[in-house]
Amino acid sequence: MFTPVRVRLQMRLLILRILLKLGAGPERIYYVGGSEALPPPLTREEEEFLLERLPSGDEAVRSLLIERNLRLVVYIARKFENTGVNIEDLVSIGTIGLIKAINTFDTEKKIKLATYASRCIENEILMFLRRNNKVRVEVSFDEPLNVDWDGNELLLSDVLGTEGDTIYRDIEDEVDRTLLYGALEKLSDRERRIMELRFGLAGQKEMTQKDVADLLGISQSYISRLEKRIIKRLRKEFNKMI
Amino acid sequence: METNRSVCMICERECTEGIHILTQFICLECEQDICRTNVEDDLYDYFVGRLRGLWIDVLNLDKEEANGSTLS
Image (cartoon, rainbow over all chains, first blue to last red; front, top):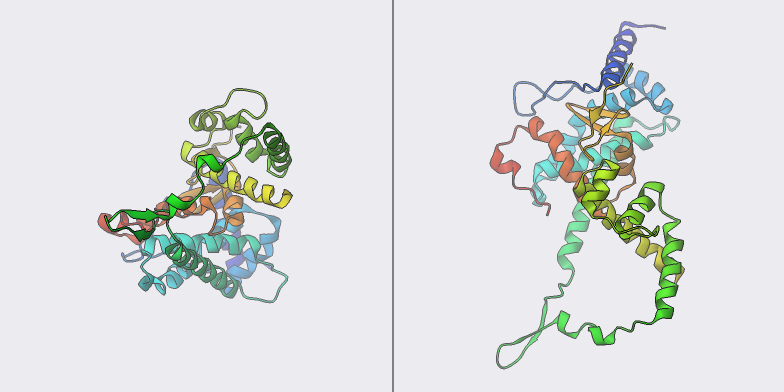
């Protein structure tokens, strides 16, 4: 049945789809502390209408569901303001939680979107705070273990492995190479391509991050972050193989 | 007809597929990347830093506060 709300939402979705096609995003700016506010939350009928369409993968539907739940992000983020993390970071982390919530929400399950999204947003912020706390209790390589009579500090890094402890042998290199190519198979096409270009794994010359970024049309800083993540993943794959 | 593209606020590429949040655009690939990333991931802080761009106007903070990120 076409109620006025449904017709209005159909129109809103249509406009949003056209804007997406034209590459022109909405030009509204909302201020939490100003005269204008964030977009209002969805009514029950509006939410039902959009959730019916969520499984179809419609980007306009996801856009609207995320945008209209941003107040929830601010509300939850404000509860963590006394943790020392500034509000901009908290709402950004909350947004990641909200994006994950909309992408993983199961419309078949009898749970309200606001309940599920709240849990995802809060969980995302809590995980971040836990990580930050963990980082603080980690020991630094420059941690002084002892101080002699002259005041010279013995650092943790002084007693860790030195170059003399490292053994290079051809056979080890060969094994490493086999492991590396095995681990590369586990990467996505884009990730493997970045590694091949950066380190010349496909037999060609190594390329700089900037060259790879230009070639793939991605910013250099993003390549740098992707590279770090890929290397971490490769390490994990190595550990599984050994 | 040639389809116009939007610039993704995460990877800065011009893309056609993705989501619009307020005045910003996130391409489909980055949206999926965000969903796969957890707090331990090196990319996580990058995403948080980029998403600050979404909120800088919304929160209407003064510049001094906006520059004081707790992330490295």
